[in-house]
Image (spheres, rainbow, N blue to C red):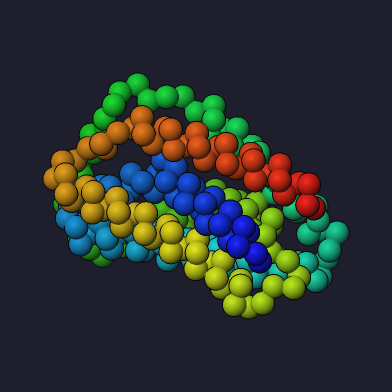
Length: 205
């Protein structure tokens, strides 16, 4: 995969991680109980993402060799899914208030890990997202190192982002989301990039 491909993959993964959702809420709630809990939840979430990303990359690679036609169909379906996800992100309503308080009862580090991993591993939308995204980047010629690298990029970016969230919540020492409007703008950027990537990749299928 060329440099542009890696940058595109990293950019989509970054904006995907930054897009507001249940994962953000879980990590912030854990972080409100303490920095250790927040970081533990963030790292566990990244581990859950790593499993999905690796399984998706290797599964699509096997599919290329076993059924090229099915893989081609999956590519088109993946591009359509990227457009759909992008459109939903663009159409998401703006938040009604600038801040949202978090009700965060004290929790143990073990519970924070379980929640961080669970919200990633048991979220079918993450599986759909990686299938749609990776189907545009996986090829028959890719090496084992490249596939592992794709999973590592997705997991590393996700972990880094949520660790930053944990540190930000700890630094603020307030159980509230600093700016929902900023998150809404990030979500719109995410939508535009998804649609642009889908359009570019459709031309190369």
